[in-house]
Length: 151
Ligand code: ASC
Image 1 (tube, rainbow, N blue to C red):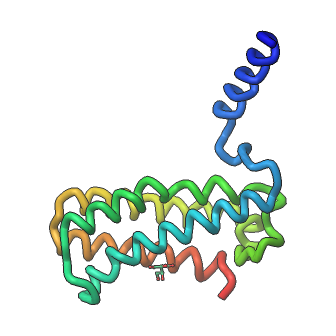
Image 2: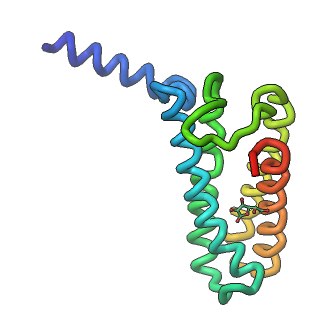
Image 3: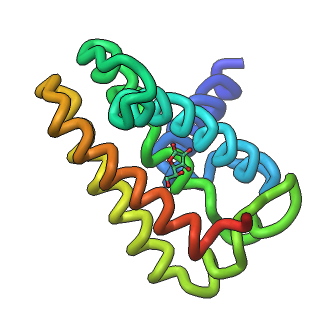
């Protein structure tokens, strides 16, 4: 019993030490994970984007809360584009994600950098800074979608 629990602890330790991508048991799990993460990011980013576009009243506290969530979630889907996750589960990822891995990484890096700026802007509570950072972040979403996402 003691040995079993030690083994279980060793496995748990190994799993947490591996790159995040290794947590998926099946390719479909990774696809669903990245889709779920993008859904949440789009929802929270969308609330801030609506304020930036004047479609919702600007509230610095609400903007900061939503930006903090975007910031926390931003990198999660990027761990879920491993080999074999290019088909099924309604994925809209284009083959270019894997055939142009360098291009995909460049687009992902641009998005991560934009979200870092958005995070900093959210902390200032300044509308102009948030608006500019929303524009850059939205542009990075679109830039990646144009090349790497169907539709
Ligand atoms: C969003 C959202 C996206 C991006 C993109 C920007 O709010 O859900 O995918 O912005 O539309 O062009």
